[in-house]
Image 1 (cartoon, rainbow, N blue to C red):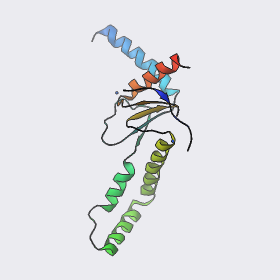
Image 2: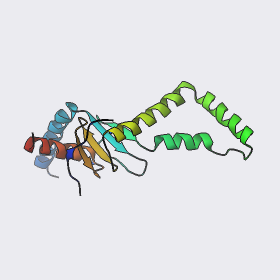
Image 3: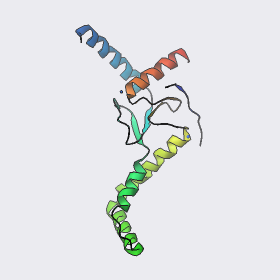
Image 4: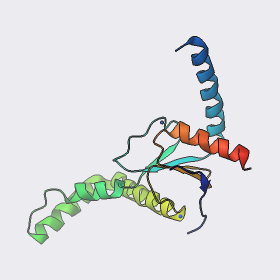
Length: 149
């Protein structure tokens, strides 16, 4: 069941007439969404749709980076340590930035009390869980906000 609700603050996807109507609806949705901050928390198991304008945070990104750093290491701890240090050096500032960003995404999800993926969060206040179509989730949140100002 998908329910919009406010997240806690704190330290946490015819005919020509139908086509025209759909275009107008998408245009209005785009205007509403552009005025909002949209963040989607997900992982690699979820295929998202219509993520334009949204920040997508993969909560398993740090694990993937760390798994790449630890791939095919020898049993000898000294050699393994030297290889990982070399991989870290080769990755340079970009690797450091990617790791920092991955962990920041986890911290942001935690601060918003995100409990399930995908989670589409609008303005750090409203969330729809389980909807991989971001535009649909945003539309549901906008509908909720009109009814519950």
